[in-house]
Length: 228
Figure 1 (cartoon, helix red, strand yellow):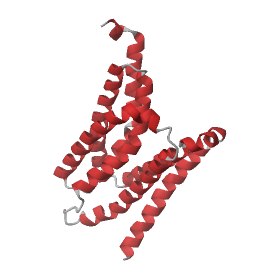
Figure 2 (tube, rainbow, N blue to C red):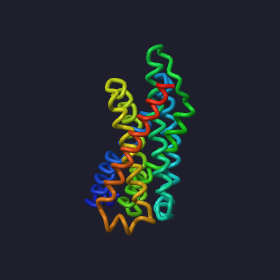
Figure 3 (tube, one colour):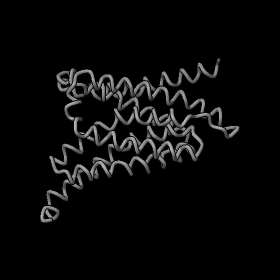
Figure 4 (tube, rainbow, N blue to C red):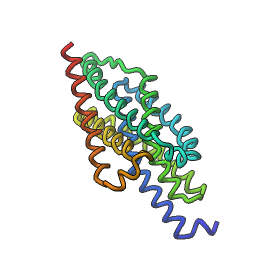
């Protein structure tokens, strides 16, 4: 009980809250983009199921995340997967817009949940590792950090869906954010550690290239689909 009153414990709580607030934002954007094309009742189901599976996945990843991130090529593959997800979500935006006139979205709840899980698998690694490092072996802080990340993503994604419906340009920003994270993930791979340390600006260049790739290819696919 005395440990709950120490300054280090409460400072650890503060750091974990701050980390979760910052790092849960990109996950919320992905979930919102994936669920946006669904009817309102299916949106809630997709978000709840996606977050539910994410809880199990995050707890499992916590045990092995630090070791996994040291494996060569893992983050390169994860970044490539995020690029594919970002382009797919932006391409799917055309389908969502095409159905807005008749009020019958054609999105599949199973496809949305699959997209949420694949993206969260890659994007939650930084969150899990940051929380685990901040907790420094304190299981109470670790459990608190994992538990806090779920409602942040859950309510954040619900808010993002409403904002995307009101401001469609946010969809483009969301897709660009996914590409940005993908570029950062690729350049952070263990194989590229020495290069990224020697050239710190490479991280931002790779992130910008990732965002440009997703937005450029996604826009081209949209235009091609309209022309066909």
